[in-house]
Image 1 (cartoon, one colour):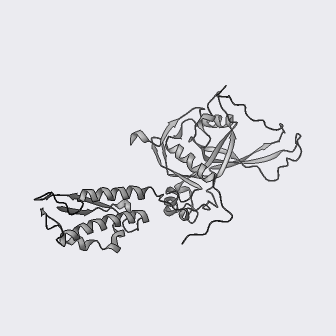
Image 2: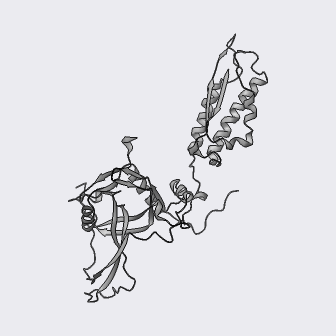
Length: 157
Length: 180
């Protein structure tokens, strides 16, 4: 099994800023899953497999759970090379775990990213920028009687 | 993303939702105007007007020539990013980012325009500054402008939805306490 984890930071994502809570949650959940996989491999829980394991133990040290938020954008590639002598399965295969994670992700993504507390309904412009130009017209008011509703064509007639 | 461009250049007196009218006169009635008597007033008033950039908020289907269903066109003020002085609301990138993310329901951000001859900065639509003009006058103003910018779908529907969301807001006098 090959776990290849690489991290891509984009200038646009401003990595020094903490990402939104749901993005952080997703990052954390994904990395926790990967760490768990790596730990299983390192602890020899997959001994019954004849595996081509190419895992990088340094990855375990790169991501401390409390520091996940510092890496707002990840590219994770998982290549599986597992050959078993029999068909016994001792755990879900990584693809299945990834699928279940994606399901969780989709479910979480349904949550509106903006909570009511983050909305500022009172934000307003007190002093608007000056108009391009201004002037005045002179006018007299003439009472034209009450307005009447505009007749509409009845689409059902 | 050529198929999803934000703006196009139009001209003529056909008005659609999302049309941007630059230097459009908006009238501000002075508070001293007396309208007590439903008769002809002989008093001559001086009515100030300002030339502002506005965007048409009325529905396109209500403004089709020959089948128009409204007599006044609803307009909202828009300003460019560089129009704001330092220290004012919307003078910082943070304010613009908050508005872009929808955290300021009273504002809506429009993308910059890169069309040849019509390069424009990012704009903010202020839903609190609403005007109306008679539709025939608006058509004439639009015609006199010559070529002008029109916001295209789905961005104009996005704008319209944001306006509706702001307009239909309800503040509860007694809210439910948090469950924490």
